[in-house]
Amino acid sequence: AQTVTQSQPEMSVQEAETVTLSCTYDTSENNYYLFWYKQPPSRQMILVIRQEAYKQQNATENRFSVNFQKAAKSFSLKISDSQLGDTAMYFCASGGSQGNLIFGKGTKLSVKP
Amino acid sequence: DSGVTQTPKHLITATGQRVTLRCSPRSGDLSVYWYQQSLDQGLQFLIQYYNGEERAKGNILERFSAQQFPDLHSELNLSSLELGDSALYFCASSVEGGGRTYGYTFGSGTRLTVV
Image (cartoon, rainbow over all chains, first blue to last red; front, side, top):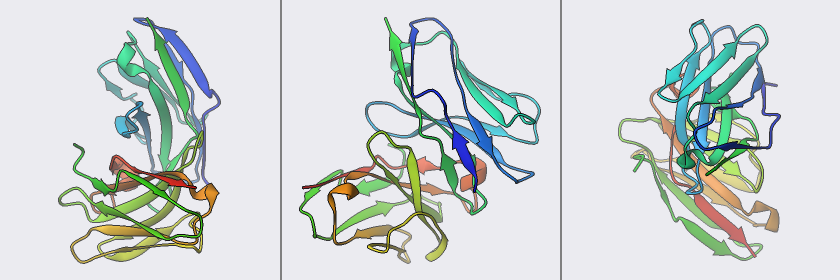
């Protein structure tokens, strides 16, 4: 079965610093997509960034970027210049063979002033 | 507003009861997905519908059922409720076949509390 593992249940970072959240996944697919979602205290799930596995270039969205290591099946999220509003649960997800997304258990990120 | 509407936002009910959660997908999206998020847990995939037909099934209990109607809204029915069913239930939608490619648009969830 496809799995997504986030090994850091909780992390904290000082405002304006950089933090990296880890994610590993397991898939037998050749063409797949990876995602990071953010869930702030409002509970709304928000898409942060998306990576196409066949693209070697790492995806970036403003202060958010990924380090995609296909051979190692690793997909980490880097948040630069952390802001208080980045405080949230972050979920890594991969596209499942059934067409759905498979999520990790999440990393709770706290940004401290 | 994400465009995916879930009602109700909160629901408190007793054990043994039955509830219905409702979801209207974003305009133009044909696929609807239901997920359960329990305390300190990730999102568990329950079921997917595409244009009225069941497309994929995850860890959905036999006490739970769902359907998607011709107007594309979907309902998740939970029966014989137990305390352990207390969770946040998300509905998400995507373009045709696009969930695993483009990701989902999520609703704001229904918080179910079983007492």
